[in-house]
Image (cartoon, rainbow, N blue to C red; front, side):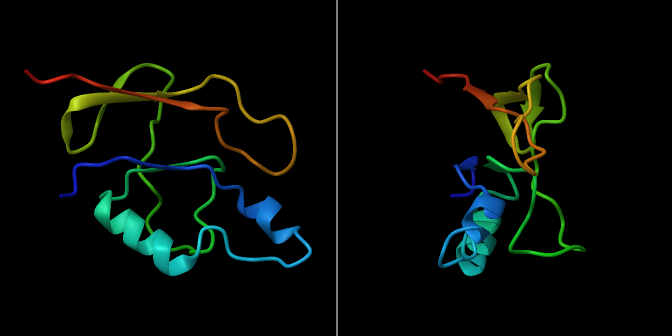
Length: 103
């Protein structure tokens, strides 16, 4: 079953600043999550660490307007107009995801 959108509250830069730095998320876990979610991974940061370019970026909302979620016909998503105001995080402050209930 690959009809999921993964959301992970990760900040790679903050994880690296810890006394015992670690890859957040762990590379093997992140790769598997991207595979199962068909690249639809919403992160609290705008990076793909620990992966490196030329890795394909995650599929994320590209607008503050509601848009269809690729591969999920009954879902829509958008990102916030606000961005994080602290640190190196370049991502939106939050994402909205809405699923149409099927009867």
